[in-house]
Image: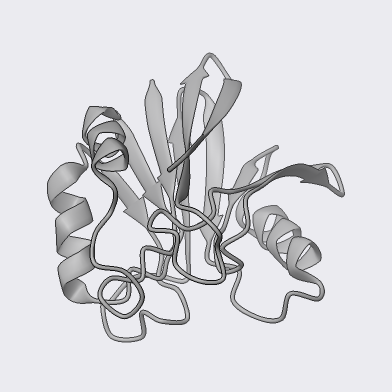
Length: 162
C-alpha cells in the first residue's frame, strides 16, 4: 500500500497551491495522511478531491474546519497516530511521542506537522515522522512531503522535495 504523508499546506495564507509533482503523488497514493494546518475549508476540499482515502487532523490554523486533534489509522499492518503537534518547539518530540503512546495500544508510528521541518527519528522508542510543509510555507526553506510503502507491518519512507 502506498501512503502520501503531507502537512502544513497553509493555503491560502502562506501559499497558493500544492506543487504539481506532489499533487500527482497524492493522487497516486492509496491513502493520504495530512497532519494539519490546511488553513481553509477550500484547502481541505482540494486535498479530499485528490485523495483516494484521507486521514486528517486539524492544526493550530484550522480551528473552524471540523477536524479532530488526533486520528489513528492502520494501513498495511502499520498503525499511524496522526496529530499536528501544536505547541512550543521545546518538547515537541516528547509531546508527539506521548500522544502516540496514549492513542495506540501497540507499537505505532507518529505523524505530525507544525514545525515545517522534516523529521524521521525514533524518540523514546516511538518512530516519529514529520513531512514538513507540502507548499514550502515559511519557515520551511522548500516544499517537502513523504511517501511510505507499507506491507505486512513493514514501513519504508521516502522524502520528496521541490
